[in-house]
Image 1 (tube, helix red, strand yellow):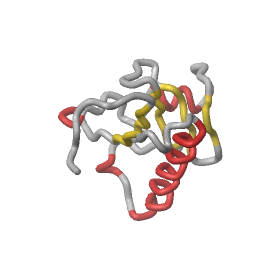
Image 2 (image 1 turned 135 degrees about the vertical axis):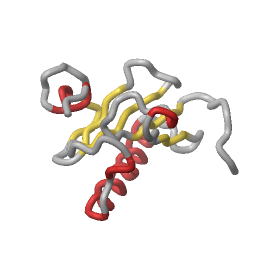
Image 3 (image 1 turned 90 degrees about the horizontal axis):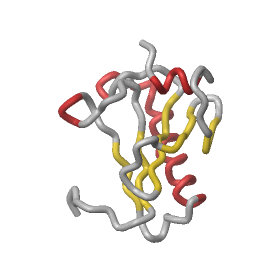
Image 4 (image 1 turned 30 degrees about the horizontal axis):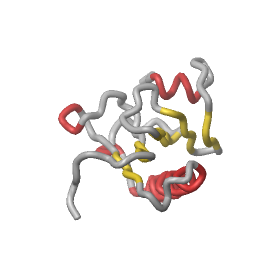
Amino acid sequence: MSTIFSKIRDKEIPAEFLYEDEEIFAIKDIMPQANIHILIIPKKDIPTLNDITKSDTQLLGKMMLVASQLAQHFGIQDSGYRLVMNCNGDGGQTVFQLHLHLLGGEPLRGSFGN
């Protein structure tokens, strides 16, 4: 299935890559919900979190590591940031390609536990 993220991955749609390697790329969200809003996206086509397999374990861990590195790069590691991964419509997913949101750079509203 073709998504906006696969088109960006395949360079059919231009975007500024904040990070890229053979498995993952990161771009700024075009509708940011915080001062810093970065999307970390695997190059492998995975529609939702429900579609991951045991073989994706290392990829998901790498996405978290890249998020941490980007938080450091943008200077929000000490003030704090939030990582969000939505799944399906009720969970807020609008693009059906697995992706991780890195949000920060300001106090974030709402709390999801302690």
